[in-house]
Image (cartoon, helix red, strand yellow):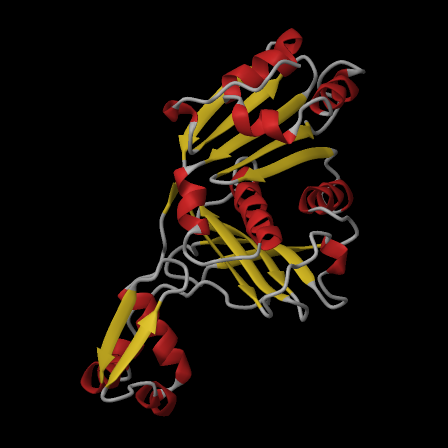
Length: 307
């Protein structure tokens, strides 16, 4: 293949769903630029963790393309090794956020299997409940049997979802990208369609995925299968934190612990995803626990641990 071409601004920060009808294959391509940069720049991460976080952000966006997501989809990692937590989230409206928590300052291994014997990786979908009911949650646990995040997710879709899947994730500097192919359920497409699409997929390099626009990628890889773009969705960084969600968190602590958080008379809570600060004085904390406040509707905070 020729040298990757530079994408234009119109190609940045979007998700494209496409179909290879003759091959019986569906696909999705994600490019993150300013979105990834805003996630990355919230904290200083070791290079290996920064790359893993960028790949997880691209993956979270990819997975919203074919799953029924009316609320949010998250990729969560939890371990007792140097990488304690990694969390990325993409909402149905195309907003993303992400964070990683690392213990120790040394360079960390890039191999997923070296991140701790008790590590857990999961995909979680949370959709709003109907008629005032609690949100519904679906969670799938991903086996850490591959050295890469893409390999682990391929194994999950193949074994748990019975969907042959190929996935390429790439991060370099201020760019992150992902490409996913899945065989359509049933006997759709010609007999060699999936094998043909996979063979072409395997010729794509991370640099090309990062550098090419989706249009160029589809024409260069799958032109003979006449790729059809189904839709294009813009993506952007946005945090879902709010004063109401912080109040819900304080309420969950109970009145004594919540009041204890008010050092010098004011509780100061900083969102680790976006840096926004929220302040509650003693009277405002007390108001959270009056009966009217207990029965009001507030959003649930993003999970801080796998459940």
